[in-house]
Length: 262
Length: 327
Image (cartoon, rainbow over all chains, first blue to last red; front, top):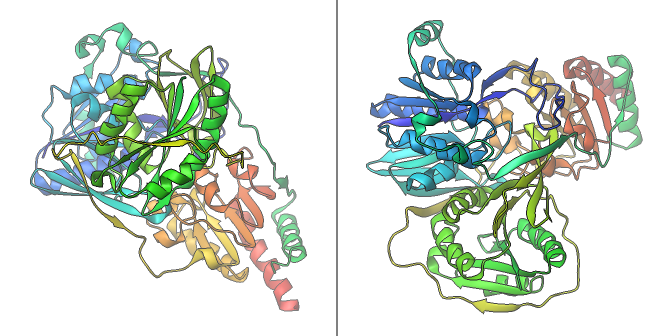
């Protein structure tokens, strides 16, 4: 069972203070902590578990600059056998479609039974790469995957639907599965694993290495581009309760009393 | 006349809300672009759905085939590819749902139609599709333009558009023969898995204390649970808490969990991803505590506290107990 896992190096923004950059098209990235995209973290864990169960290899691929290498090192430390970083100034500005085109050229030269991606990335939230890649390389796919069972050349997967429902579907291998968060419990990396990972080589592939042209990648090869980024307008703004924690707690209790909650 | 397609979404005999939300937006776009609004419906024995859609559309294209009784991205892609090829719609709207996420990207790649996903607004500028989306978990909005093309695909966020009551269009229902052949598709639907029975019914609780990433560690669950009990309610949570295994699935509020309307929803350390907000925004009273003053949760909350939730939990529990003790 050879598994390729596609991962993205993204800023952690859930609890960070986000500022829009001077260009008005990106956020201010300085001061933010970057890590593996949350969805991809689960995909990586799933890839390693499949290797442990069925044997074979795990290849981690990312696209990004030198800083993205830390995410690949994490993949190696967690059980990936090899890592590939796709990097070229021309790749910048690639949307999900352009990224899928680049990946399609690279995975073509690798052995695989399964390609795992996250269902979406935490930064742009396109949710396109996995199924777009599947279509480009001509294999079936399933997205929002919450469980994977393999038997022979068939993957039986649970897909998350709305309202707490799931559906079970079967796809033939090879296939691309886009993984939803919560599918497993990603493991912690041992210090030993981290040390070993530092010694492994990360293969670099640039535009020439993909065989694509300038017009296939980056903004030129993308469907969608950001024109303007802005703070979301609020329809309603909460009335902020201020003061010491004790003051605030008293104010909340007064509100709850007035509304008949307590 | 140009056309705008809306792909109807249904599951287990019910048209999903997203379908009507897309019909509302589709109708507005059809008016602006001088197009006809065309609902596209796939399924088996779904004539009743076709009639419901016809009220809101200029036309309904109906393909009935047992292989599309349940959603199957493979079968759907083949069927809609034929319709798009024949009718060349300006735009095809698909829900940004589990079904839409499974269909739209591969469809767009296969037909080389530019795709915008998870749109909260959609328009045309100079015959080019322009959309509004969110990035970074809803902390920023983005206006994006698409590459110029004859035909576009966009997936539409749930609840981004309010269904309007408008004069019925009473469109014509056109039955189209199924293009699906006997050959087995690359994907096979097996069955639905309903949510596990039992557990706590958070939808029935008068008070919910919802916790999110801000609680930091599973060891902090008991202290917030104590507060929930003191307030006469139960603990609920946002998705990351269930993903981490800190609380069971039946406590999850949001589009992939439960929709709740308690008398009080106290959100602790929840930033307010739209999936979560969808599930709790109808609560009578919403109070949110979060360290980030720009957290989207403050856009739906009645009252907000910008602070570390753990500083508030203790005093709030004590003061609630005092009040209750005096009653």
